[in-house]
Amino acid sequence: MAIQLRKRGRTDFLVLEKSQALGGTWRDNTYPGCACDVPSHMYSFSFEPNPDWSQMWAQQPEIKSYLDGLGEKYRLEENIRFGVECVGGYWDEAQLQWHIRTADGDEYIAQFLVSGIGALHIPNVPELNGIDSFAGDTFHSARWNHDVDLTGKKVAVIGTGASAVQFVPRIVDTVGELQLYQRTPAWVLPRSNYSIPGPVRRMFRRVPLLRRAFRTSVYLSAEWLAVGLNGHVNLLRPMEYAARKYIEREVKDPVLRRKLLPDYRIGCKRILGSDSYYAALARSNAEVITDGIEEIRTGSIVGSDGTERDVDVIVYATGFHVTDGFESMNVAGIGGRELVPHWQENGIETYLGIVTAGFPNSFFLLGPNTALGHNSVVFMIEQQIRYVLEAIEFVEAGAAGALTVRPQVQRQFTSDIARKLSTGVWSTGGCTSWYLDSHGVNRTVWPGFTWQYWLRTRRFVPSEYEFLFPARVGRPVDEPPDADSLVESKEVSA
Image 1 (cartoon, rainbow, N blue to C red):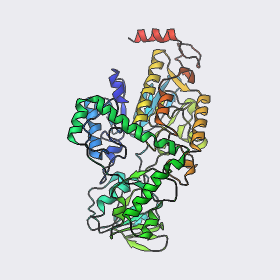
Image 2: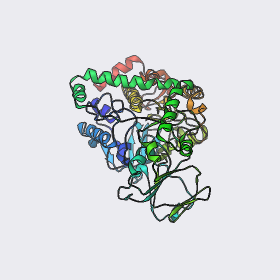
Image 3: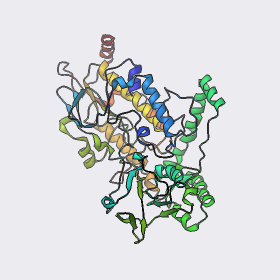
Image 4: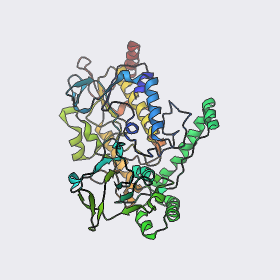
């Protein structure tokens, strides 16, 4: 978003960043084996391509380096306030401005507010009975403690999400004993992360059309999966078959094999890929425990079956607060209505996952129901950025002070989303996942193809919005600017 503002010659914006550096997820997650499960050429901005990705699926250091490079290229630090954590704010109806409060007690005032907080930034640490009495080291995979030497230690890994699939194979040969506490097994497909040869990377640099063609082929190959995920689950059976055969090939112990075989449809939870996860769990020093945890003691974990196992270190691989992650930035809109309580009481509702009624001039990037289970969210974010910029420019060009989506437009969108999600594998596949909120409703995933989202967001439609004007203008609230005033305003701005 900051880059696109810069490209338009704008410097009248601030990015408030709670940490001390750029990078978000790829700054915070440094656990062994951390990598993206979306192909590198799709997990990067189309307007800032990188022909030099060294692997098909990039590792964390390379992604972080890519993001840092963009920050330097566009001098984004000039517009970033690091170490500034937003804790709330309110919409000033008289001045048509947002007042944003920070943890330090400061206040920032702006006409437009864009939430770019993402979904995977607040670690979800379970409340385990007796955990305060544990004398060893504990940490979440997203806050990996590299000062803790795992060599020869008895390490308990709690959770079997995407991070566990990546770091368990990296530590199993280092630790003395690995205990993996699994609540629900994941579907894991075989995947080798192959290097992109130097000659190919040189061709990508010299022939941009070739690089774009490769990116397009990656995009289209991933896009077909949306058919199976969205109402045609039988099309996913070949993937389930491949995953089952992979388990049979890697795990010879029938008891362990049964523990690792999911009892829900593939795609209901995030589909993972690894060529070493099952082999790691089949090692003699690894144990998969499915009985649950009854209690944590000073140097041990007691399972629900009463078995007590000595433990030196506990590592949480329990994911993030996703649907409730927006609670970290509670704002009050028109009439003082607070976003978080409103969503908790009435359910999360937005239009296009970008705007929500009653909260003028505020926008979400990667907002509710715009994440994906089959392709790159970077594609979705790019469509949202373009849409937000068009909305902002329309407000400014028409001399309006603010806009807010019409409630009936939002209700129709929410209804359409719910109807489509009801037939998707996330609702019918027989599992619970982080895609669902506390009411069991999928507030995370986009139910369809990404090109359909592109169609929905490719242009800003003024009739879907109500416009708020400064008192001196005197226009009715719901009257959008006409074409003549739009042109006139652009000429004045120029």
